[in-house]
Image (cartoon, rainbow, N blue to C red):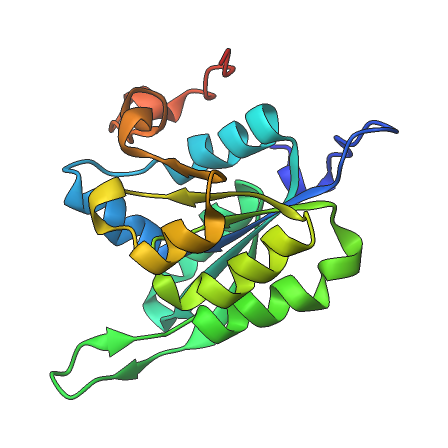
Length: 185
């Protein structure tokens, strides 16, 4: 199996595009729409449609999820782990916001465009900064109704919503075992 991280997809005059993905926000946002995201198809979609060469997936680390992490890495994501802790209600949390912002700034000189995948208003300042420096490709929000007003304000016209991508990116047990179809949009 080919690891998408090792494929050089950049053409000489093509901008270097990185994606910074808030996995929990993405997953919960898509689930609120009543479907499950196929992360393998999503990575192919980002690569083919937007020429994303590096896709960071920020995720809380849970020891029991080793198979998931291996799958995501084989699908082409660079995983950035955050230690998880139980909150007051005993629910496991791993807030990745600061890690995502930090990585976007560490890599700032390495990319020409950034895609931020989240609906979280905590990314307002990052999105505003990228927009002002003409490095924001766009914000990709899972769901228009749950997207932060602050995020919409900072992204301005550079925001898209995933509501209408269900037919391309939904996980269907058995069907998605095959290689994803090439995106023609």
